[in-house]
Length: 330
Image 1 (cartoon, rainbow, N blue to C red):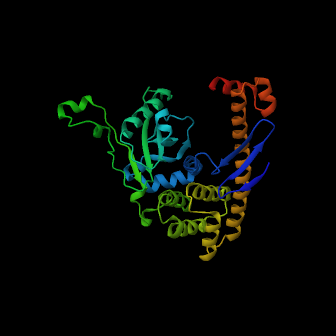
Image 2 (cartoon, rainbow, N blue to C red; image 1 turned 30 degrees about the vertical axis):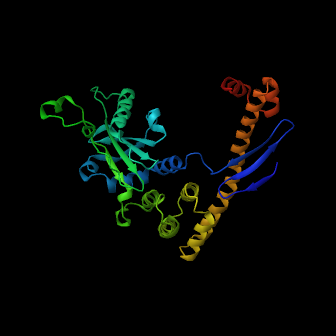
C-alpha cells in the first residue's frame, strides 16, 4: 500500500488479486461544524458564560445556573438533521423544571420554516418529558445560533408564517418566539464572556468570513494565548484548530503556526504540540476511514461480479452481516 499525504487528508491505493482501487479522503472529520459545536457546549462553564452575557436580563434573573445540566436525548427531526445541530440542557427556571435548547444552523443559510420546525422539536421534548408533581409541561426555550455570511432574514415568531391574523382569531392560533444569535451581525465588541466563550463565538463568527486567514486568525490566536492551562484546554485548542483547517481550504496549520509566531502570542510550544497531534491523528483517522470505505467498495464490486458472500467476507474481512446488507443494496 502506497501512501502520500495531502493537505487535510490522504490519498492511497488498495491493491489485491481482484481489484485495484484508489480512494481520496479529504478532511479529518465527517461533520466539522457539528463536532466543534458539540465539543464547545459540553463545557458547562462556557454555556453559563453564554447565558449570562447574551440572554435577555429578565430571563437570566430567572435561571438557576447552578442547576444547569446537559440533558440526554436528540429531538431534531430527520428533515432538520442536515441543517441543524442541537444541544439540550435542563435547568431550573423560576424554580420550575425547564429546558434550554441550543441549535446551531451549520449550513449558514436562513431556513424559512424554522419556527414551524422548532415547534415540532419542542413537541418531541414535551412528549418524552417527565411531568412534575402537578402534571405540568416544562418550559422549552429555543436559542438559535447562526453564523452565515448574510444576515438572518426570517421572522422569529410562529405568527410570521401566517398571513394577517385578525385579532378575533389570534387566541385560536399558537405562537411562540425563539431567541436568535445572528453572528453575522456581531462585531468584535459584541463578543463577550469568558475567554473560552469568546473563542467559541469568535471562531463561529469568523469561520465563513473572507478575512479569516488574515485578521480574524490573529484574534483567534490571541484568545488562545489567554487560555489557562486547565484540564481539557489542550484538547479544546486542538478542536478549534482542527475545525478551522478542516472547514477552510485556504488555511493550514502551518499558516496558523506562522501567524502565532509573527505576533509573539506565546504558547508556541502548545500550538506546535497541537499541530503535531493533528498531523498524526489526521493520518490515523484518514487511513482507518479510508481503508474501511475501500473495503466496502471492493465488496460491492465483488458481489456485482457474482462472488459468493463467504468469499467476499474472507477477501475483505468485513462482518458477514455488513456484506449481506451490501448484497441487498446491490
